[in-house]
Length: 277
Ligand code: FAD
Image (cartoon, rainbow, N blue to C red):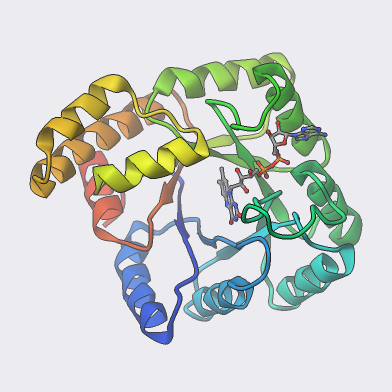
């Protein structure tokens, strides 16, 4: 089966972490992903590590897609980053607003992701394939579902080529979002973001923060497993593999894995799906 895959990492915090991530990438490379993407923290401290990871990936011969967020930043700084990526032969960018750590910094010169997309297009024309974020369960700060949908449309109108969604476990949310986009004439590929489940407590905390819903039936089952991490992993693998199967059957244009810098869970799901390896 051919399904376009992409896999996301966050920049490791140390040289040791970078070595570990290289091994993770080696394992994941058997899936022949379209690209590996690397997140970018708003507000500074981890940004150098994003650059290092992106260039590492490129040196290994894999297509790399850096994430770039605009909140708290300036046009000259973003221009400098774009030039650096262009000079290095990077062809794809995931353009985001980002989130400032609470109480830190000011919004900066570009306030929303559509302004960043517009800026990238103005500065670099068609050089980069631009990905943007989409939220099938709506962004937690959106005034209304309609406003969020229109904000997504603005990013596409500004020049985004495709989108990657926030993760979700309720396929109807994705299908509904896709239908709503189609009704608005937004026809870029919207690739579902897939979060493998390896630990329930972490996932529950994270989901609350980013506004992704963990359906009650899943929550109840995970809670009932308590500390039984093997059962959590096995059930997580079933649930996420089935979600992916349904998404592919429903015509999703690809799958984007939030790897959390681990190889095993993504590989296990892809093995179930008969992809790669
Ligand atoms: P936007 O599209 O700008 O939307 C942000 C909010 O503002 C939404 O609620 C929207 O409805 C609203 N909005 C948009 N335009 C307007 C307007 N004109 N007026 C009023 N409201 C408006 N974060 C990082 O820091 N680094 C990363 O690397 C990173 N990678 C991500 C990758 C993916 C695939 C996804 C889905 C998210 C990622 N995030 C990352 C998280 C993301 O930065 C946050 O969700 C952030 O809060 C919103 O970013 P955005 O690009 O979706 O913003």
